[in-house]
Image (cartoon, rainbow, N blue to C red; front, side, top):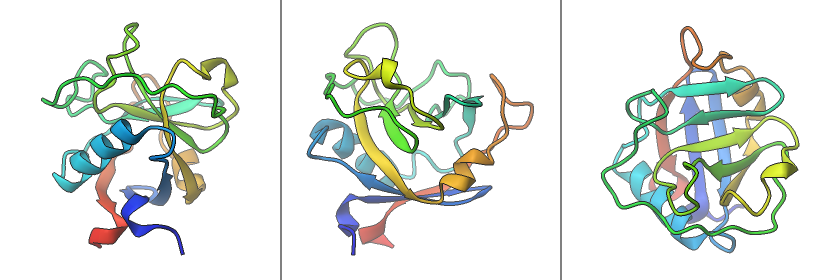
Length: 154
């Protein structure tokens, strides 16, 4: 059984996605994801940028790609963990220490992002539901996170 305290369950409008959180790689980012999930921050938030063969990005309450939480930005926790299919990583601006609430899930290998973006988790179940998200930048009718919960709380 996975560690319930470090398992994130995203219920998307396309189905459920289980993510194994990686505090061993990014303790600060995992803490932020858990905090935001427990506050209900991600509930109803859309995937505003979904690029086939690359990634699905969400976590912006404005749905524009320009927003975030009211919490301070995070210090980068870059690692050598490769950006492969199912990897969850933080989105940021050109500043390395600008990750806040936005994240992306890789559809395919994107190892050119390695050591430049903070990997904080990996999809262990339901990747087909990420694959099913409407595509576009932004999608005409974007897919959304219905709920984001930590398994220990469910």
